[in-house]
Image: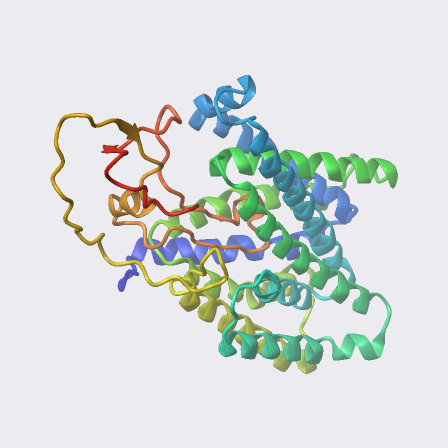
Length: 403
């Protein structure tokens, strides 16, 4: 992990927080239906990502269209199904979150949606991943803060309580998107996956707007400016600066920093709509931020050590390098050779010292399709396995790990 952050990264992180924080105020300030706003955000995002995909990943797009090599093999249909379900979860997130900004305050909406790491930790615990006591303490703080912050809405009732529930639903949907994306991101690059999810989200939201008879045209000037702001700030500037920062700063640092979205969004709502924060909700909002911070930081500390084995037992930690095992000398005659299985992935990661860990999970609800980042083993150009060496079959046993 880098100990020093350069000034350019500091500026980029500030831009990221401000740009992403504009999502809720711009949505709340518009007069169009939140579902229509969600559709146009994904549609405009796809219009921007599509040309960039053709420019940066033309060969990959051509390979997918032609169905070459392993893209459409039988074992690849399962990741495609998970990708479709992930895009559906993302569409539910946009619909719930953007609707909640109209029913409750912007500060409450952003704070409750920011509990996504809490639900992500619960999903991981349900999948059998060990959860430390510190993580459970952060979960308790976040739940206590959400209950305290929503207490005023619970007492008043009406649409504010419904907005709080929709914000929590948006956080759960975002956690589901992250979990499903981890299962679908097998052989697809980030630009292609982002474009695919934006297209699926747009089509699903279009179907919902059509069934609900929601108008997608004829917006007033304030709504048009809000849509333009959503495209320029969170969709382009926010994602661009985020991707720049991810190459220079740890994902945990950015995850904690993005919790500043709640106060920044509240300031934006006060400036755009003269919407203030109820003093009674401030302690609860602070507890939410502290709880999510504890969950994010504790999860980052657990990931390097948590490598459970396939049979439910903990596997020993990997050595820094593979120990040398002397092999007996073999006669050159009467030996048959075969190709061994795939090489140890640790050898591939050793060639890339700039990569800190095999997988980095990073998510925030404003990122849309870019909020799951996987750093996988580098793929060969022709997508074919090239054996690293040959081995006499009648002398040595295959000790490659079962994967």
